[in-house]
Image (tube, rainbow, N blue to C red; front, top):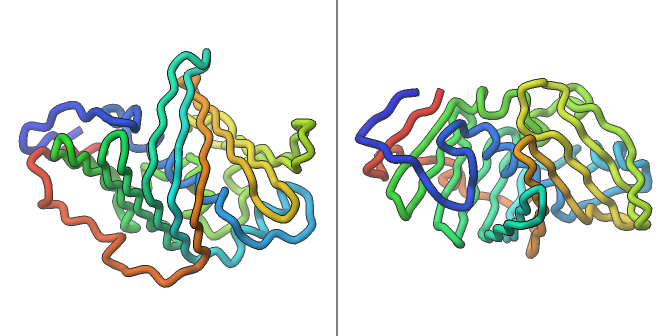
Length: 227
């Protein structure tokens, strides 16, 4: 790990940053699957594949809720999400901590505006073996995930995904379909945290400015490279 310009350990609403950007990317890419889009009648796994097919870009406001395994600690955050396939995204966190996360196709950058600190990692390493591959890759989902139907008994049609890679920190993702739309995404990680994502004002396949996915590496005082 290479340190530049006297970095300090970042703080904020996104955990694990000091160790690696990989789990951050896992959390941030997957919620895009919740966003509204066409889904023909099919099983959960088929609906998931159908939804990803033809997805080129997205923009949405989001709310992220994370609970510890015992439900004792609740963290809520909100902001705006932008996606351009393959492999480019931008998350603008407004609260509780202002942060910007950008994947430009080569690296993933995180700018903590409160600390005026930038951390970054090779995108190939950040995405490798994580559920982030669901949006970054263009091949079939089951190349990197075991995909099976799951029954929660709540009237929704569910699909469960488990990463095939052994080193990912995301243990399980469950996506629920209500009628013709993707309704709920639940995620469990190896740290015992449970995360739920809710999106509003979603636009599928809008035209997005390419500058959204460019990060100016000179924009912070502290600089931390994780590779």
